[in-house]
Length: 510
Ligand SMILES: Nc1nc2c(c(=O)[nH]1)N[C@H]1C(S)=C(S)[C@@H](COP(=O)(O)O)O[C@H]1N2
Ligand SMILES: [Mo]
Image 1: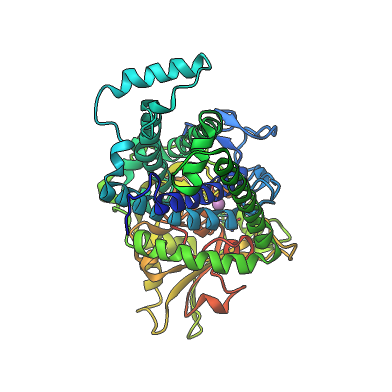
Image 2: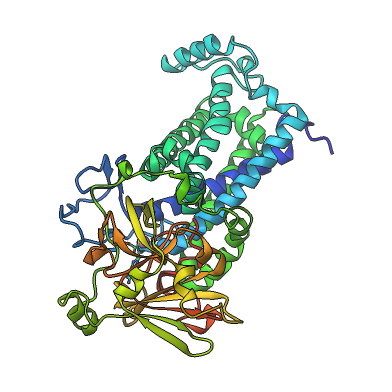
């Protein structure tokens, strides 16, 4: 195959089209994720009123623990967002799926670019490119059109633009994107800190999107305004004679393709919404491959490495899920009003029907583990605290050796889920983690935060902390922790309340 045969070989044109399809999916699912918490911060505690940008008129209460991030979600039309209508779980799966193909497409593109020598027309190799680009810019600003001989096939301004987008902006989006994964943060905390923490990464990722969008608008405008016939013929046919007839043909093919892609984007939304569970099954079948290869190997550094110190502790802490009410758990409410007297946490082997009830004093008598870490909700907010409690491995040792057949650990709450997505009755909040995640040093049942008993709204008297996972695994107001054989046997079988109803992935590492 003559890879560099025509001006624009087939592989290049095919990858250009695929990139267009995937970028659209990334932007649309990105909107879904942003709409689940439509605010951006530089401050890592996301304190109310400190946003630098927001897409909602709602004012945040200054008081902690009265407003939850689920209350802040905004519903966006499926015409714009993928999939739209407050489906953060599916939005995240679509983002993950698109990014896997987008990165693959990018790697193949870069490899072929260098293999064929075509990189030479994109990557500037002389400093001359700057004065030349400046001349081009002045020409465009004076609304003149550079002569076609100027493009061989790209002029200096294009070279700079393309090089920037391909070799700077795209990697920048990948880096700021993965920085938002709790598994990456727990393993490479210095990297996330260098980007300004979770909120820095999130805000920079958004700014990257804005620059990308600006580039797309400029790129498309210039293609259509400056030597349009030449451009569309090259984009669609790869090259050849520039005649009015061929240009018209190319333009029709291009417009028809764009219409088909837009229909495809919107169809993805409605297809997802028509059967959300099916959409979750099929998208996570793909994203799990990436999670297993890249994220499952990443384990937290360990408390001794001191990635975060007490100086990083946040002033404000967001909440998701409100404390149990009298209707949800009379026991919990009475115990709260009575200094936690009478409240126990059950440690159980659900396979052999063996259990023990631990009081808070029992918990405190077990080995203590303490570390400073940033909590992130997959909706986007973060807060750094010192958490102290008992490692889950030490806790379960109370029952003796791990029973044969135990493959997961499940935690349940005294409180009900704040929101069920499909108008189902609210159920006790629960989450399941696998044995490797449980064995991580930072997987604890926490009873202290910043040296004080855990606050009521943050999970008193004890809550899970699973450092390598997003917040939806960190069950608050824990009532029971137990060995189970398979999470398929509990709830809807997806491994947690947020997995069952919001269709989050079982694996909470990204
Ligand atoms: N019982 C219970 N635990 C829960 C939730 C909940 O709704 N109920 N929300 C989870 C989610 S999505 C997050 S992000 C964290 C929030 O923890 P925080 O409120 O302590 O900040 O709690 C998790 N644990
Ligand atoms: Mo969350």
